[in-house]
Length: 228
Image 1 (cartoon, rainbow, N blue to C red):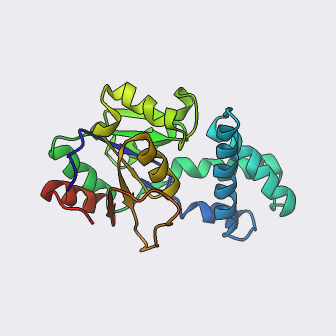
Image 2 (image 1 turned 30 degrees about the vertical axis):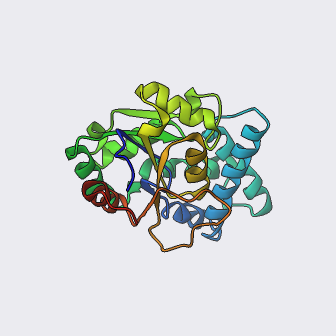
């Protein structure tokens, strides 16, 4: 059993948002849908590379550049600028996973403070949560664009703790990405890995404090003090 956190910090892309429809954006361009995963992995790779070098760039700028690289190898059925815009607009049309609304409401009812911490923009998180009717449940929409580095650099998590005026150990980071779980754990946060697909957790990363099948499962675990 672990101490109950005072603040639950949510990753946004893929953790709250269902990004599967992004594949349709590539299909619209006459391209294989699996390119969406290749592209998003490239975005993370480049963001991490900049962070490792002590630099950074906005998520949107990296995503734009990575798309142009993908399109250079597999041209879309339209002008490159129009194709990039079509894919990027997909972020504003995403929905939350089905387990998110009941989970968020249960966490709020339990008196926990909720914030987001994204490598993307606060505007994307705001649109996503507003569309789902959940915006008022979140105290803050934090982004690494206001910090000194992308997650999983320690400074990103420290930024969240400073903004929420709590100690790092009083926060619980929720993410589907093991690299985010590892970074948060090394920074001193409690962690919850949202494993919706039953994927094995990579043994080379710091294990999560708890594993949950969704945000609703997280709320149940925190309510009864259990871990899984």
